[in-house]
Length: 433
Image (cartoon, rainbow, N blue to C red; front, side):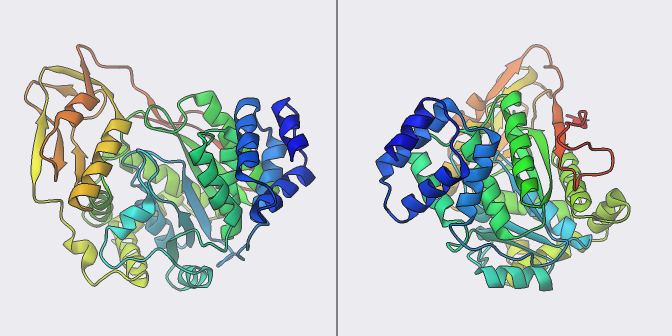
């Protein structure tokens, strides 16, 4: 192990056998945490190339079980994390209602970003700790399941990620790619869509870094025989209006049931759902099927069926209401919204839910580019007693900022992603704010 650390410290690429030995040695406690921490730090500074990331992915997958596909055409969807990113709660039932089963493993909140599992568990009775067998059976019988990673799947990732978190080596592109893809491979879905966030509210701020990460994940997943696509999306402001576990569950409910659909959230959900259908081999008009799933109520019914299968109390989702205490945060000057500190809002909402319960949080009314007059409501705080942090998160200017794309580009594998997407080549920008 000392020689392996030294080789990486000096910039060498480790081969498959070395990464196999590292993972196996760490899982058997033959390698000390201090040694692996040193290797991760060397990886952080020297980088991991794509073949190395693929080798590490294989070693991590082999540390546990790999599920067979619950259904031949099922799809998984991953988000790299953001603020007010309610998309998973929306696109999973949409895709399932269109006849494409969804087998999704999700994570919990990390830092300022929200976690899909936490949002589901804000609904009374919902369980996310499904066994691999129960997970697969639910996908087959209901059409979709969203669950936590089982201890039987990629145990090396859970243990190694915790060490990376403690040693500040999380944001290494190769280590991130191996961590994400290993879980998706072990979960068994033959098709995968990655929603990779970039910007102020994301873990990665640089577009070139995110492009490299997306390309690496697509290529690694493809090497395992998966059809996959990556969609690089903007996270310079909250994606949707609701920030907070229960508030986001309410947002997804109303989006699917009542047609109260935030335009920015709707635009991205339409793109992601389309990619999920296309990557899974949907034959037909994907856009038309998605509209029908929404307008007919089929997507909402699918969400209710999934929640019931995972233990939701009858009427639990319908009964959810925002925290009774509410405070409107108003603009102290006129102008245009130039910036929104999404991490500040995410951390503030997380603190509110921890203190006041799952239906506390923040609801954003004004977005970047919106004109405001002094006294206009920028956001509503549910559960809190002060709006100072929210007001401080808004940056107002005398002129409107230039528009930004909502989706920067897509990268698709050869086996999926639509007929006009060349393997590994980014598409043009798809949508702007």
